[in-house]
Length: 307
Ligand SMILES: [Zn+2]
Image (cartoon, rainbow, N blue to C red; front, side):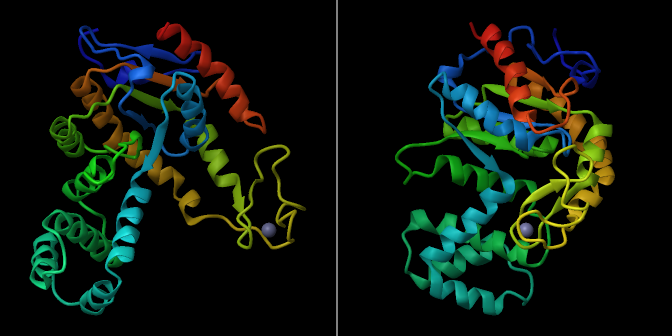
């Protein structure tokens, strides 16, 4: 096909996982993978599928590092905290003053004359990210892309990682920025995995999920065999289990995804021109062997495509 539309990306009950490829698209064998994107609606089982795909591609000799955007930002900040503890304290003290941007932190660090020029950008970016997160704001597309670039392309990392991007890119602007950034870093994306789930099942699963506040054990009142004791207590420590706020917002998150992110995905596929694995879990029953069922379904599809 010439162009992929949202309709092409829709799987229905009974469809199996499958690859779609654009005419003239670039197909890279998994042994040569440089990066993979996993995307899909909230609660579509991305968390369950990610380690399965990592395992499958490891069999081809490619070790994909899971890069979730939240982790990328947190790591950037915690690395900076280790590197510049004193300055960090100082910045924390002034953080509530007027607007501080990347340039402010850059100039501030430069004036201290304590850092190598190569370090200034990374540290200023980390301080800027911390500043934004402390104020409860979302980092913008430019900063998000810069943080990802930092994680995959740092000069001081001798062995560069092969990223499995999760949650990035999410908007058309991020897709354009990522494409430019990969070009500059001499990096590629070789596969897009579109984790597809059944919205109804996703909502049930998210609404049924319960967490032990004491030890983090996850239960599900909607899944046989995963219920908490008497419907509300942790089997390990007897604490009363709770619902995550995030899980309660699931319907909102799915709507936002369908309005904003889903259209961006067809844009991304047409831009990167790499194969898309439409990864279906519609035919898999919820239950304890979900991971095994998914593996059994995906592996032959991948082996067949890359044979
Ligand atoms: Zn517990």
